[in-house]
Image 1 (cartoon, helix red, strand yellow):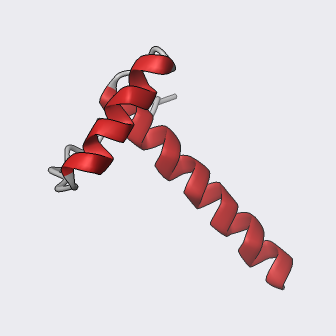
Image 2: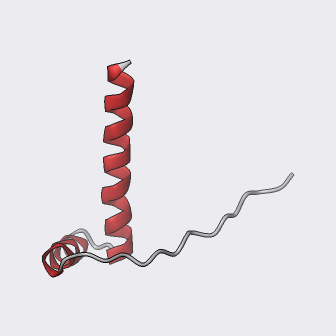
Amino acid sequence: MSVNRSRPISYKLRMSEELHQWLKDNAAKNYRTLATEINMHLEQAMLKQQQEDNNAK
C-alpha cells in the first residue's frame, strides 16, 4: 500500500504592498505564517465558489 506524499507546489506571487501588509497583519493576528494565511483565504474562496456552483445546478 503506497501513501501519496505529494510536495506542495512553490509559486511566486506578486501583490500590492497594501494586500501584502493586510495578509501579514492577519497572519500575525491568527498565529499563522504568511503562506498559511494565503492558502486559508484561497481555500475559503474555492469552497465558496464550489458551493455557489452546486447551488446553481
